Length: 458
Image (cartoon, rainbow, N blue to C red):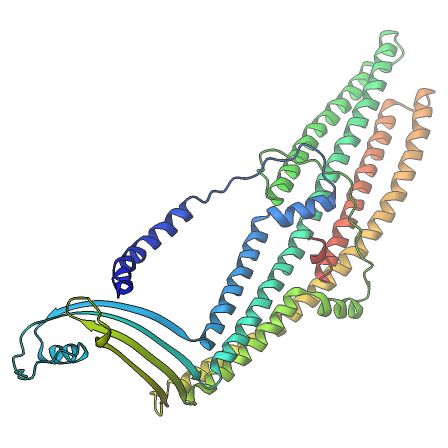
């Protein structure tokens, strides 16, 4: 019986040291943001990186692991339970003396039941039990946990959809800032060339000092716009880095926009039907409603009886020798039926029905939110496309006007003020066209998110 003595030694060591080991392992965890890549990244590459490095995605994956563990825990009620217990007792209580000594098989023949004396006892036991029937509640809990596991997966998809839309938004924000900066730099180059020509003309007496000053003021304005554009680019690039899980101190460089969004309906009912079919949050809500119904069923089954099989094998010995002739065992089959519980089961079922009603109300509210989300997305796409068509036409007209005014200015037919106004109108038209183009792309990405079509891209 040396095995029992080994258990006596190892049990307290394991009990006291396992929490300390777990705490030490946890304390070694560190959060270290990865450095920003030097090379330019395409939109698809950024979406892949976002899925791996975004803290929100990591948290969603952790919730899936938690749901998996809860599913396994819910199914544990269908398995038998085994354990070991070790105890050492010393006392002089008559009842304990009698029971312990009898189990030791060492009860004296002439014992004084009122004053049997003191006793020592070392007990080692193996025990087990198995729930044979609990009204089917364990099976229902397992089904509910399985639904929770699927909800967690859908939660990851929902976060992926929002993250994908956010990455697309930030990507095009950076691209727009780069284009704005490029337009400003072209404007600086054009105005600088005109200023050089005008300075030569001014020294020759061909233009007025006021014309030269007007052109210098315009150059100062575009230089100021360049500073503002550089600042916007830095902020947008830093925000994109943080969104991908990188340290936001250094901006990330976007490459080509290689994400091809699927064709999307532009009519409300067709778009809503697509959203109902694809949106992860709607699927998760459906599972949540079903799970609340299972909870009502589980509460109703609390009134059914239970059946448990349990057994125990143990040794009692005053000297911890655990001789074989002092072993004991018992096996029992226990049926129990709680007839009255102070109306606890009634209250539990009413609470479950209330939760189910709440989930159904939340589901109706979510459908309304999705409908609003889809309508806003459709409206945004329609408006962005219309603005882009107008902006492209405006750039063509403003460019034609600038060419005409430049020739007139170089021929002396118009003054510098008219030329500067034409140049300013052209640059503003280009900025509006750039803004309209990226607004259109961002609106399309938002509509794809609203329809549930973007989660697969992240």
